[in-house]
Amino acid sequence: MTYVRNYGTPDLFITFTCNPKWTEIERELEPGQKPQDRHDVQKKIMVETHVNVESCHSAKSIKYLCKYVTKGSGMAVFGIASENANDEISNFQMGRYVSTNEALWRLLSFQIHERYTTVVHLAVHLENGQRVYFTEANAAQRAERPPSTTLTSFFAMCEADPFAATLMYVEMPKYYTRNQSTKKFQRRKQGTPVPDWPQVFSTDALGRMYTVHPRNDECFYLRLLLLWNKYKDDICEDILHRLRIQTNNPDIQITDEIYNEGLILIEDQCLTIANKLLIEVEMIAPIRSMHDAFNQELNRELQYNVDTLQEFVRNNVPLLNEQQKQVYDTLIQAVDNNTDGLFFLDAPGGTGKTFVISLILATIRSRCYIALALASSGIAATLLDGGRTAYSALKLPLNLNTIDTPTCNISRSSAMGKLLMQCKLIVWDECTMAHKKSLEAL
Image 1 (cartoon, helix red, strand yellow):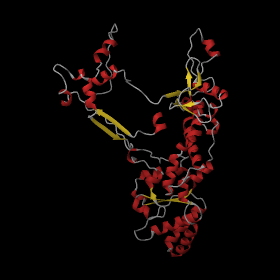
Image 2: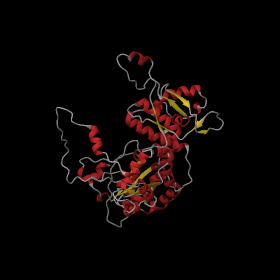
Image 3: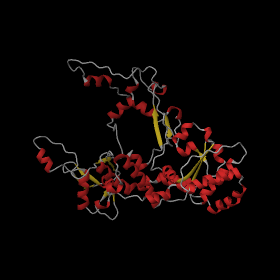
Image 4: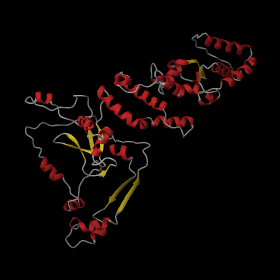
């Protein structure tokens, strides 16, 4: 993953195929010879061999299939012997197979395995929190003089070397090597010269900080702070992409509001894991009021044109008949008085139920209040301004029949949770078509 983070995903995946049973190889053999006796022939044929080149594009879906047809229940079979009869050397010699390609590679002293570029692991710990190995004889000495780590060596270099003070922690292996005997960083003596810094050379070496478990609170937040300052653009890239899609504006650039939204998402995770705010761990504290302005659910319900709604109300309230006016006045009065209530509107088809509901929604929204328009079906939702299906908006569980006490999958701190707390009215059209547990969940 370190290579992918620095260089991106691979572009090509190349495999070579060569079979010693090919006729091109067998006809070059002398009597009594085997393919493994003629490495030169195989290497010559390899030039004309089949090369498979695959383009690595993207991974949309990964499926892992396992066959358990002949698999029984989970069990392990073991036996206890009086002596250890496991001869690892013999097992290795009996099980080892050296192909002709590997044999030639070893005869010519070529490298069998190589990784490029070098990846250097960098320790992350608090002050005096490095791992120390000791015995009873040297415990006191180890406690007084704990061994130096890559992190403490980095701090020491920042004080002694002006160039090191300009680097991030993960950039140290690119310009410095660590002397294992002295446990100190020292400048590289080979590589590409760094402009304006004499005797400083750079290489392709990469640094990678060790992962830290979130339950290791202080150390985890230290690593989080180091990562935020460098990778905040990458962390917030998904928020920027989602905002561009929602606004249909691909030219939107990253802003402080987007950074703030990223900090809020991180803080929500920290509250869930360790019940700590970012300010408690000396990180930048997000502005929650800015998050409300960024809340897309809230913006969706406040984007109506008030003048247009007020004109719609003025023109259509006089058109209500006596029964429709009674329904309209009852609901508007309940909203004005902040009276909780559950109202069921039932009437035959074609008597103006949708007209009354639309007028009630327009009246509440014209006062800059929030009114949600839900429906049991997608077709019914299209008849209401701002309508959407109840399953989508309320995050209702799909297995209502199997749950005794269903609940909506909405947390108090989520966007929909905050929207429901500010909502004045929820209209559920065709609620009789929904399962009764859907209403109970709401």
